[in-house]
Amino acid sequence: QVQLVESGGGLVQAGGSLRLSCAASGRTFTYYAMAWFRQAPGKEREFVAWIGGSSYIADSMKGRFTISRDNAKNTIYLQMNKIEPEDTAVYYCAAGRTSGSPREYEYGYWGQGTQVTVSS
Image (cartoon, rainbow, N blue to C red):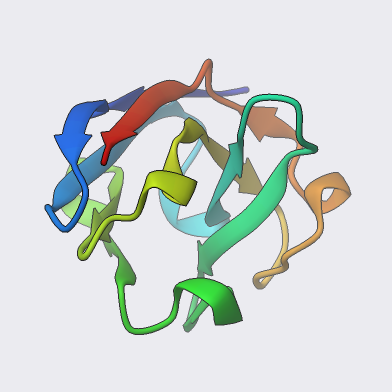
């Protein structure tokens, strides 16, 4: 089992920055690829970024978001810059026995999510 706890969400003004964290516990962290997904009100959950041996950011967020991981702390991060009102969503952390994927079904473990609200 892997337990994931997100933190760092909150209210931020458009154009600002925010860093989300996801702390993992349980099975060996390094065996898993980790990812961020988000779900805006009334919309389906969408892929944001994954990190394993390498990393990938969704095209619509490249240049604004970066993903990183600290294996010593069993934690991944999502640095969000130049935040836009459209970034308002619940952000979920996920872990899976994959090398890295944008597909939800590749991830068997999910956190509870952290709310990001962007004011214009």
